[in-house]
Length: 163
Image (tube, rainbow, N blue to C red):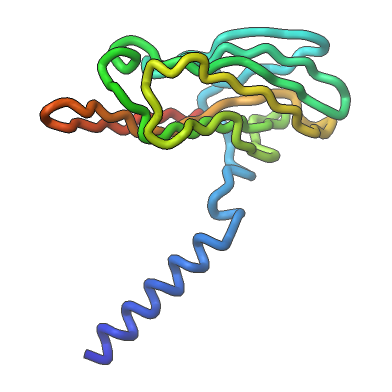
């Protein structure tokens, strides 16, 4: 019995340490291996679309030496758009990269309201981030859970990362 109590205490301590350690939950220092997922930042006003089979991120940004102002919209793609009635959660992050594809910092870009309608339009974002001169590109990552609340509730996890 004492062994079980000690094991539970060790597990709780590990979970607490992990939850409080921001570096553990960050992508900082990771290397983007999927070079096709990198958006090289040009100066001035730029726009583009970043897509996966599940999600499209339409963006417009304005880069200055000290800031990146980015706005746009998130939209589910294909069967994910009409096949699920609710977005249980959706979390989109922007990853700021140096010229070697190393993540310098990351930040939330879009967080859905819990259990929102999947046809929720628009799912817009607008953020301004301070950046340093070493940041030459960005990449995106997301995770989410979609739910169909019909007779038999079905859920699916979606997600993508450039690693």
